[in-house]
Length: 288
Ligand SMILES: NC(=O)c1ccc[n+]([C@@H]2O[C@H](COP(=O)([O-])OP(=O)(O)OC[C@H]3O[C@@H](n4cnc5c(N)ncnc54)[C@H](O)[C@@H]3O)[C@@H](O)[C@H]2O)c1
Image (cartoon, rainbow, N blue to C red):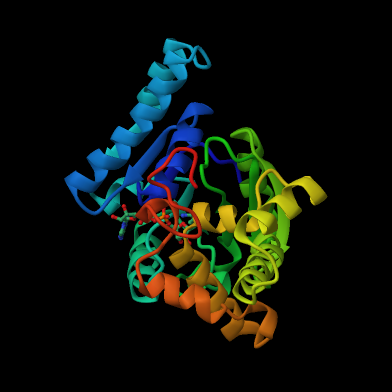
């Protein structure tokens, strides 16, 4: 069950990164978007990332060229038909997933492996939209994909050893380090990270310490590269809130519950770095 050709459904933040690292590692890669505009936006971000590497001397111009030569963009789902692995990186929406995976299941070879990059949906539920639950798994990449080394390979009760091995081998071939996890909301990283971030916001909300002191405490006391409130701003407060809600719903444990302050900040449009304001003011550099 070797993977030669790779399809990526979605060329947004995550899909563009996944398509890029796949093509960069020498795999012919087709990335599918829903419109020519969205495709051009995604491919443009890949080109800019690669050009940035060339400009900084981190990437040879020839490597940029060969990466782009391995990469094809399309808005036609049928162009993914001959892929050995299709990685979905589309918006979190079950109706969309049902339609997308159902259509892919009809188009692709029975032997092809399907993967979802979802952070929050159940891989088991997504696999029911196909007739190949043994060749269905999660491949959870981290943002920014070209820089973050980890992929969580998520197995359901039905994922076969063979397809797990083939998908994990592909992840290693594109330069990633793999950890394997069961299909439980949050997998390993978010299972540990979300309660930590929610607790940090609770500590701030309760006035136990200032924002800077909370972040300095974890940075200097635990050797973390950044504090939890700055990290939450990077993740996006809306994203962190949505994941916490889904995890709270799944486990019904208070440690996953998003604090009221987080909900208020999201409602007020303070989504962190991407909106210019979260726990920090991002209109200044560095954020203050
Ligand atoms: N953003 C993160 O930090 C992060 C990290 C890990 C995993 N994820 C997961 O990755 C997935 C995508 O997130 P994102 O941040 O890249 O979202 P995004 O909104 O940046 O990108 C999604 C893209 O999918 C496209 N799309 C919509 N319907 C499609 C279809 N039917 N076929 C192909 N493309 C379609 C959209 O046009 C959009 O460009 C989600 O499941 C999310 O949980 C996100």
